[in-house]
Amino acid sequence: MNIRVGWVGLGDQGAPMARAIAEAGFELNVWVRRESSLTALDGLPYVRHKTLAALGAASNIVGLCLREDSDIEEILTSGGLLKSLARGTVLINHGTGLPDYAQSITLRAASAGVLVLDAPVSGGRPGAEARRLTTIVGGPREALETARPVLETFSQKIAYMGPAGCGQNGKLINNALLMMNQKNVQDILALGRNLSLDLGALSELLLSGTGRSFALEALSGAVTVNNAEHLKVLQIIDMEIFADAMKGLGQDVTTIDDYARAGADGLPYAAQLMAVSTKQS
Image 1 (cartoon, one colour):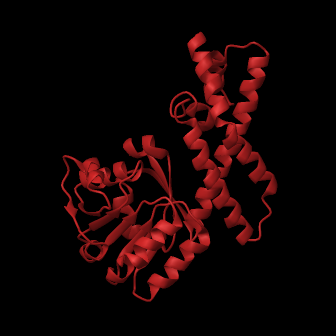
Image 2 (cartoon, rainbow, N blue to C red):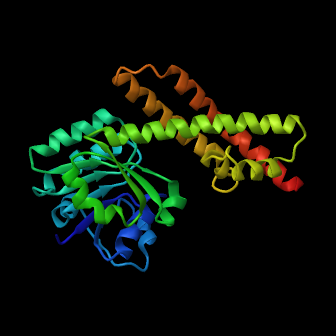
Image 3 (cartoon, helix red, strand yellow):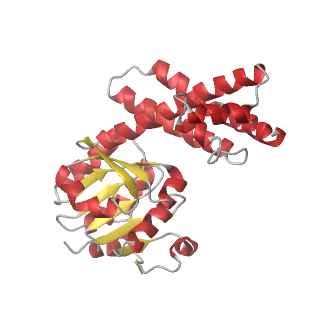
């Protein structure tokens, strides 16, 4: 198959993903709202299209890396992308959203012979830049196998979870567990402070032992005083999606939701604790 990739979404995470695709030698077709977004692809070959329909017609795999389901819906319908896709095209939604919406795209696209994957990613911008994202996939296996060479350009692991919507379920559960782990870390750091322990030394100990976790590791690098408040807002949005999705699936996740939201709310506090510890060291 002569793979021609269409890409929409050159944001914080989408830009390094698109760069990975181009650097791997795949034809990259892009559409952007703002000219300035194209600077993310400086030094790489790509074809810019003035309309979404033109991008869709030029591509047989199309990746969307957008923040919300409403953004994707606008691109697909008002923008005319879905109607422009040829039979056999694989449409990949890398955003985090509702499983029901992922299923609705699949049903609408099926009439045109277009295959759809919901494939949200975990790892943030650092993971995307390092080409070490975890890509969590729902949808038909044959579509995954077609798209696998593209996904492998930025993924350390591709986790297939099942039919349409299952990729979103997997990502939402992953997000909830991260925030629950953040709450655990915050409680332990507060305890360590109350015991007058050096939090830097305590963190190093925990990261080298059985108590290690990504939530703690992130406080030593990816999460800072400067970005913690912004990350908190994004995490609360993710938990709202999680709660809506689980309610729609008939699951009572009140305990998980409350605990995870507390972990998101406490992220700026934890970042401050670690920053103070670093200065004291």
